[in-house]
Image 1 (cartoon, one colour):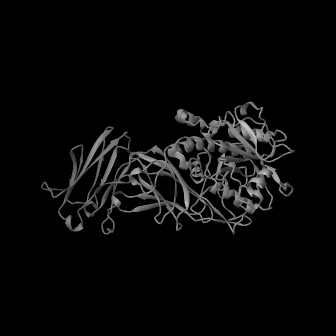
Image 2: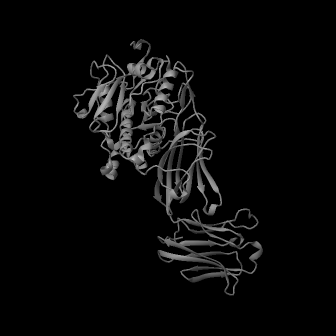
Image 3: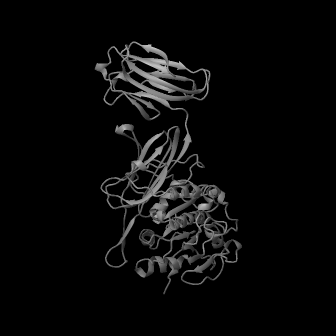
Amino acid sequence: MRLGISHVIIVFFCLSICSVASASNNKFGYDMLLEHYGDALPQNGNLTVAMVEAMRHGLWAPNQADSNLHGTTINYGLFETKGNSTHATEVAKRFFGLESPLAGISEAIVFEANAWLFLVVENGAKAPLDLKIDLINHSWISNTEFNSTNITKRIDYMIDALDVFQVVGIDNASGFPTLLANSFNALVVGISSGNHSEGGTIIEEIGRLKPDIVADETYTSYATPNVSSITGLLMSKAKEEPGLSNALKTEAMKAILMAGARKTEFANWEHSPNQPLDSKYGAGEVDIYRSFDILVSGESKPNSPNNAQEKGWDFNQTESQNPIYFFQVPEGKKGNLSAILTWHRKIATVGEDWTQVNGQLANLDLRLWRSEMEGEGLDLIYESKSDIDNVEHIYEESLPSGLYYLEVETNHEQVEYGIAWRTDLENTPLPDIEIRPASGISKINTRQIIRITPEFSNAIVVGLSGVADGSSIMVGEKRIFRSQIYPNDYQGLKTQLLIDGQIIETTQNAQARYEWQATEPGSYEAQVLVTNGIGAVFESKQILFEVVRIDPR
């Protein structure tokens, strides 16, 4: 069979072929993973993995004599190798070497890039070959324009229809490569320094943001196999446990990896509703612990408010009703949310053969809602709604305690998607207690505050203006009291504030403002009463709170 390699120009990622030590796994959260999940990690022997390498000076194979590669049998796809490549060896060490997360893999396949393109992807104008490979690493680029659109569609087909997870890198230079990184369905990798291609894709929906994720390495050639190795460990875990098997769907695994990415290293990380990822750092820096933590939390099913989880994932498809996923930020906590929605571009042939293929991409959006208590409404916090990307991302810091849900919004039914999220929790100061007006009531000034002030935590200011108009008393964002007395009924009523059973003050009407000051730290109970002044209590609510310190005012 004729390879026809003369019209393809393949260029190495690595600007110089460097023999450098394998990157420390600690940079990718591996030490944290061992600390928390050491006994639960997979054996890694159940995956079929491959790497595609560009030929340089006739060399493209890893050096099997390298001590870091002992224990893994390396086979060569399509034809035998002609010699060892330093670049290929360094890639292999990071991908499945003894110091990598994927250590213990029994076999790996290595393809030369031109042979892989023409014999596997293009396959004589037939459907791409199904080699039953789970995961492929691509630490090479090509700037050829020949057949690049068709090749990109075929790679997307392999990822979608054959469930072959493919991790590809972008260039170390400023220009955007033509092949691989323009894929819709692959996971595209950059480096944490940001010294890589940017500016968006250059074929098929120009301007889609890449990379999807970054890793702390010197070159994208070496960042890419680190991400592949992390992906492989997660895939091995999903294969070991039947309850996690849907995470092997490439949409779900991509979402899990991206939702677990860290942003703390990037002070200037930013995105917008129409630009789901940062233009330089994507979803952030890969973190194996955070993504593994999401994976083993288990698959969540939509529309289950009683199964609200701080982290989770799902592989599913859209229906006539938008799917929603609940999560909870507990009392006394605030949450930092990272949520990712991914779906695939679908590839179909025109006619019976593969001489012409078309791509079709559905449009999905992701929304974050905060659910008010007692079914009284929803607050839209954020929405990610790119018109060209097949990923949506929500990243919100310091969410107050409460019940939230993520909504997958689309007009398209039966679109397969992967969704993943994690909420990192932090302790919060003592919450405000706030009186809010009832819906539709605007005549009475009701927005007063009951609070333990952050700067003077010994003070509680009780504002009862409007309690008798159907207002709500809130602790943080949780409703603890809803008045049933309305404006026509509150004439002649009195209010009282009691702290630990002692009356602090009584007023002659249902509108009042009190201030009480603690003399020492401790737990206290406040009671708000609305009475008729001769013993009948119309409203009563107890509020437990804690004074954690005494500060001068």
